[in-house]
Length: 370
Ligand code: G6P
Image (tube, rainbow, N blue to C red; front, top):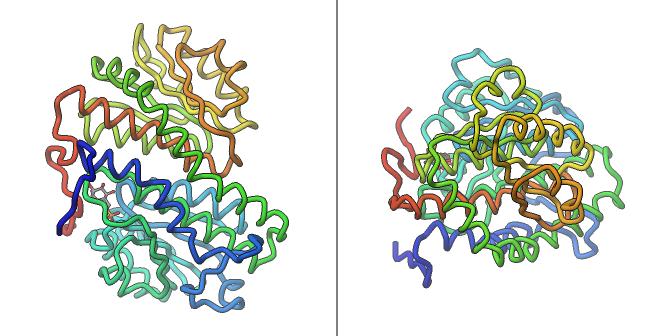
């Protein structure tokens, strides 16, 4: 492999900056010219077979699992099919109820993760149809699944996954719209609205990347701490989990991601003077609730960074210490934007601590043992 860093200091930074292209490439050829319909010709299921799906299991590991957490919300809200998520290393051992009317979606950047592959085989053994979302054509997962959506992120070299994760989100949006159209759960006007917003995502990511220096400063301050929290509700909680994992993987700073409303049931005991809390606040209908959770941690001395939608800075500014605004998009699409500042914070925190950003200790890019 002759992978080049193209002028970037690390593969991870290069890959973060490749996300606008990865979004465009993953959408390319999968949306009709009039922008009102999603065309996933790689899915071989007939409309009748899609209508027969009673439940969906999303199974994956690590960052791919975190894409699946967003995927659950996306598929449930667009296609109205119940979705369960499992980490692959747990799935087989809990006797999951897999029936022929279950669609099992495995998500894997490499397509070679042993736990994920074993889960795929178990699902097939039970008669389920398996759909893979993977970045590698010809990988084991892609060969063994019934249907395959290839994310067009291009090769990902850094151990910490960035553009593969966000391309998996795009794949879930496309899949959700495709199922919604087939099932009639959403009309074409709605689909057109989501597609229009999706087409804006690459430029919106670019505008976040333009603000990297601000995040570098945030990260340098964070890098002096040994503990912090990420909080959010709904898809913001899913993104909080990915932001926390990214930071742990490469900066070795311990953090916990918590559903904002759950803090008061235990974790609040750990909030003390000066502890950093990164709060995602992108879901309009959950603003008030999350703001009240921010007040709970502020009252105990936390230093809060709010990641918020443009247009709501005013309201949130009063409640937080620092603010980072992301461009406005549809609530369901916000993870494709809000994770980007968290990736950059993890990158710069790792750098500030003098770590090997692209090759964190104890971790491998692809884990082929169970
Ligand atoms: C390893 C990597 C993670 C990755 C996980 C799943 O643990 O270090 O970054 O998320 O495997 O990999 P996959 O290739 O299946 O997405």
